[in-house]
Image 1 (tube, rainbow, N blue to C red):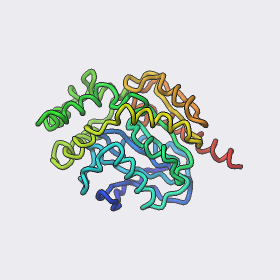
Image 2 (tube, rainbow, N blue to C red):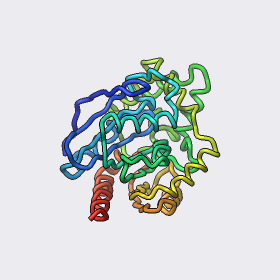
Image 3 (cartoon, rainbow, N blue to C red):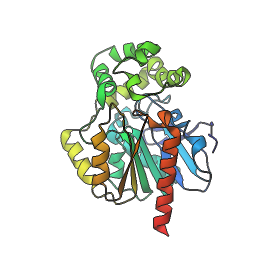
Length: 288
């Protein structure tokens, strides 16, 4: 499968959302990314997926988006999850396999058991009490609370030594990501005050302990096939969280991937593509 490089936009209640779409009538994979990343995080996976799929990749308002929200108050965990639901409706996506990596907030959408989502994959993502995860997430939260700190951090992200520093973005990738790709992720928040505003709002919206407990209980009722993909060497998403999620979900199944940290689409795209293909095949078999 080749990547569709054309970037399109769709208007939602909070503003315009950019996305890429391979098109086609096959099963839909809706691929979501993490904070201060965009849809390009999935580029290595696309050519390794089986033919016939429709792969849709929005760039969410999580700090690497280039279209600031018209309603900045929607730049929260709950708000972005709501936008994902709106996005599926706007594109009339049905029979969707919803795939999360790093950002776990779309579990808030899954908790509502939307009819359009018939299966899901939780790939090394936030769960339980791990909001925000590790030092990178806490660094964003801290910079959001200090005037000028977010802009300073954004400027420092231009340098490889800062990106790869212990506790920084280097803790999310076991294998190097091209500098040109990371430049695209970090440029919007550095150049656009409205993007920094959206990211600052998001960083201040961490779900409360009560909300996190509610979310964990809601996952017990999510009776659709869910693949839990965890990186065995992950430094940010505790290994036991993958096991707990798989046990919690009525149709959960755990797959562990070696030689990878959090961002499995970049570290181990082939292994992840195989796992996603097996999820689709498993769901097709259960329907027969």
